[in-house]
Image (cartoon, rainbow, N blue to C red; front, top):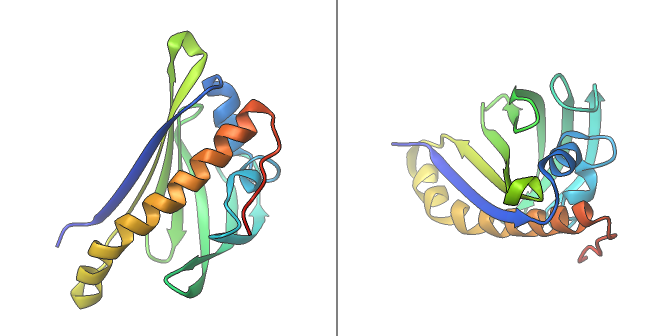
Length: 155
């Protein structure tokens, strides 16, 4: 059974350097782009900016609140950042590509993981719809933060 892979993209009206800096800064930037409806209690356990950072947070999905722990790597610093979740190996990748002469950014969030058996079949059907909603909310907050406008977060 192939991996489950879900991704969403949006154009953000800010330079790639500004956008990437928000995503990579788990102390101040990244917490501001996490929709409270889905994420809570982001903690930096080690580092804080980019590669070498270790984080933990809770995510609510399908009525369940689950703890996630991740280590951050930057296979392409300034362009691609990867969160790898222990112990599953699930990944979420943030990719930032410049557009319009560097005045805007195309940001893609992609999550990939393996889920075998009957639960894998169920998740293969449910997860993409759910994660696309999560990613859309996160990309909207990123758009607001990159503009320097405080984002109001839905309850």
